[in-house]
Length: 609
Image (cartoon, rainbow, N blue to C red):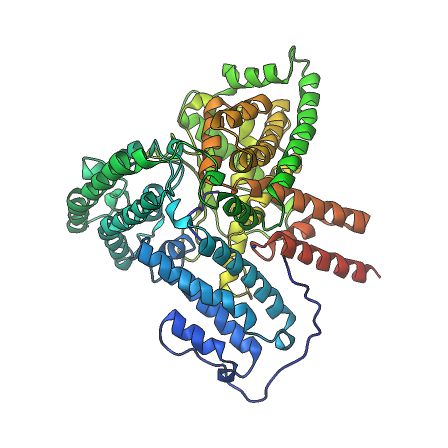
């Protein structure tokens, strides 16, 4: 799942709970004003009847801040009222948001925990971890300068958000038009901040942005009717004046802005990019990478610990792969078998339509089996789409974009149809499980539909939990009727190996001085994935230091908790109940997830007694 621009140790919850319920009091209302003015009001306990009431208003203010500071996030999660605006991606916008985030971070010291309910304490703890990790990373390190690459950046986010927006009312149409008019200013803001990065010598590696100019050209259609920005208006009935207006905006405003931004990337940014790959090569890069590890994994693991874990996992999975090769009586070693999987025509489709149809078939075979593994399923539906042509060459094999029940937008599993000879059939079942169900769609849609929790809990994005769940989901394939074909089972192991390789390669590049070719060679030696996929993946690890570590770290934690639960409950273990607990609180830091599972186990033991 891609979620780059949309921006991690549980404290013991052993304090005694003191009841605090003032008689005949009315809830406090926040005064009108800026977020900072509201925070200053919340900071003073004399303005409130109870700490719980005060904490509730802190959470409400944070939810308001989340969508005010990022209208894109508001659209992403279907929150109304901000669809006409773009985020302020500029130096001033960054500094403003950081100053507000600092006050939210300081709020961890405002409250008397003895006067909070147990639910309050849990919510406050999750809040503090989320805020603390965001503030620690962004206040210490210049994250704002590394926001553009050929997998994801402003040039992919703009068309993605435009196409996510509803078109079911005159106001919705006006919102899209307003955003179209705001694209030039948005691109200017990105150009300003990237130029500042050039001046400070903090820029992306060259290989991660080389495709960006061509990607920009691909979304800059000469004929406005063929523009990605015209798509929401193409099928409107009896709306020619609106359609004419949009065509004029595309021709006179958007296309010239895209041309200017393309020239900036090509003529100024690319010549000033760096030839090195590791984050360690930037100022304070080692500490920066360590903070990225903490942010993405929600653990205190070191780069060396993660590297060694990766080597161990690669060796373990390699043995499992060798068993399947032996069962197939293949004449050759694992490298020969991987070459066979990459090269034999039987493993590939001839047309994009065949590939997409096969993905849809897999998903629809999984859907009716989900009740075997889950007691609660989301109401939101999902579909399968092709990765847009303007980004397919530099993009990953697949990804998931959330929908919104509130806005009436389904989630979508996007499959990449570029270079069909790099999209083997044997990977499709594992990939569908990860990106659609019971992976990202199930997890994210359930989180969005959470009830009786602060709103901010429905919009959290702890990568280790989200991607850990996606990878863990792949192991559920046999129960879902998948992996009956030995090649598909090998494909699942290939995907698990892929995530184990990430632990080695990501830390190798950013902490141990590996070159890009070192990473590609190690990947090829241990994976059956195509060379195109491997190259795109390695460039992704170079562009997003630490992000790829979250998958395997999260998956191993969930498997550890499942094993603990099975060992503790024995024949009383209910896989549906376990999964409902894992997903029942939304996205969480891994230690909060562990806390939840241990509480659930204690409850089950008590019931049995």
